[in-house]
Image 1 (tube, rainbow, N blue to C red):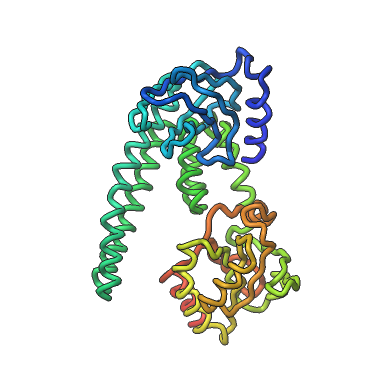
Image 2: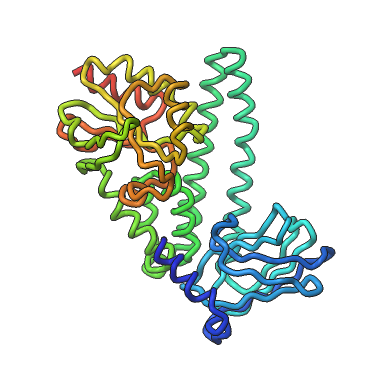
Amino acid sequence: MKKIIACLMTVIGCSTLAQAQSGFTINGKVSDIPDRKVYLSHQEGKKNILDSVMMKNGSFTFKGKAPGVYFYFLRVDSMRRGYGFFAENKVMTISADSTFSNVKFSGTEAQTQYQEWAKTWQSITAKAGPLYKQIDAAEKAKDTVARAVARQGFVDLGNELDSAVVNFIRKYPASPVSPFIIIDRYINYPAPEKVERTFAMLKPAAQNSAYGKEITETRKIAAKTGIGAKPDFSLADTAGVPLKLSSLKGQYVLVDFWASWCAPCRKENPNVVAAFNKYHEKGFTIVGVTLDTRKDAWLGAIAKDGLTWAHVGDLQGWKSPIVDEYGIKAVPTNFLLDPSGKVIAKDLREEALQKKLAEIFAK
């Protein structure tokens, strides 16, 4: 991914290359707003800006060169809403109203396919809101039955999304949109088995696209923490003393990537604490690897959540070398090592963690 972004930065930021006939042209028009600056990025967020232009009477033009069919994000200064789209090296047009709630795009087949997926995605994920409310109500009422029903609703929703992904890929196996969806669903929210299954469904054109190549790179990195792998690293603990993962051989070790700012991590911590307290004396331990950048926030969360096991980190956040080395795409992420240091399970949370440890220590 970084190589692709570097390529984009090189070719789109230079005005001479921007005139290349082999590149793309994006002609845009936003109605009923004062002239403002328009930003083009490879994904949503200010830090990812590739280029910017000033509107003239609501119109603007971007020129550049894409590394094949690639996803971009367009945002107008001072506006919260933007627009994501697939571009390729041809002429494209975008017209939008003043709120960007009504956008018309033409110029790429990939965008038409992506819009089809977006409608499917939105129709399914819209069902999540009521489920969250059901869980909140059940937890307040301490109704375990209602909580279980709502959680099963999320399982069913996940299965529906998985079916939608498979159906889209079957319909468009050669489309560059298909590997983009695999990344969005199964790499950003790690599901290695689903990556393998859906990637195998792609035709060579999609596997060799920019996003297909990103998946290939990610699969190579994922092999470092795949089942049977023996990862090892050394990071400083909270006192600044280096801790080598392999020094913990002889125990079952849960390597837990988390951060103080990660709400799902903090919500999961009581479950992890319970597992540690129950099985630590039987030969189970944990190493927390933080993606924090502030030591005070890191130490504060450790103390507040009662995390009494070893903690390490370099306080570089997502820029930490360990993030790329082990393909960490989201937190919480964890993998469980057996006493020989071999990965035997990944991403164990809630009941799954308790069930796996119960199986191990029942032997």
